[in-house]
Length: 346
Image (cartoon, helix red, strand yellow):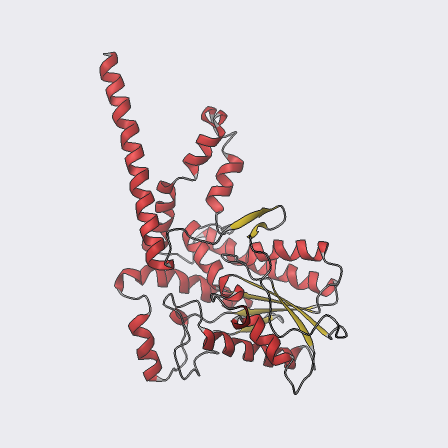
């Protein structure tokens, strides 16, 4: 009898290990196909305010005035995910660098210092926490705060179906909450590993790719309401420091509705990730993205960039339809400079 029980337990453990190994393989392969590497996200360090930050620190912004130059009138802090930080190997080809080049061009002089606080995988929740950290720790506050959002907020809601979703959400929550959940929680590392397992990650990915987001769900409505409150809070905090807050709703290939030159659109179709197998992913993304934009459209700080790249004369998106190439980042910077000129310098 003991031998039979031991055999059953042995096969159960082996089965669980096998499932976890299989899920690990699925996640690693999918990461490689989507991101070009087996690990999702970048190398980070723990931060008590922002949860995590890129290990390399704040990315350098080119074309800023020299330290010896009199303090420019505009001090611009720019927040966002990897699209803001810059999915490029060159510091001088990020959105903030292109913007600094425009604002500090020969015809305008040294008008602005631009700081790139973009962090890979950040959404508005983590950006708000990061802003709080900087306002506490930085001696000179900004005159303009820019959030460049839309993609990560939509993606993480589809994945986790909670207003609190962010990169690493399940792993962090598992580590904090696993201890008191059960007697098994006495073995904290094992319990945390269970709740943050690859098996659960596969379930989250499956929910993102195969289970439609429904606007009538309470979690969806809560996400919309809390997102608006979060941006209202950032706007209020910015005002307390005498700064102006701008929320630029980033353009995404999958949700564009404006007319694009047919030749350009056709070129992009050939290399962008597409096909019917991604239909639910795009639908979930679009539902959340558009619902958030609809809720925010009348806010004084909201700037809708959804269609600003439709005038392009060459491809501007990378294969995921979210990140931009050099031409796309340059167009965004040009549009931001126009908005800053109209709203801030008037």
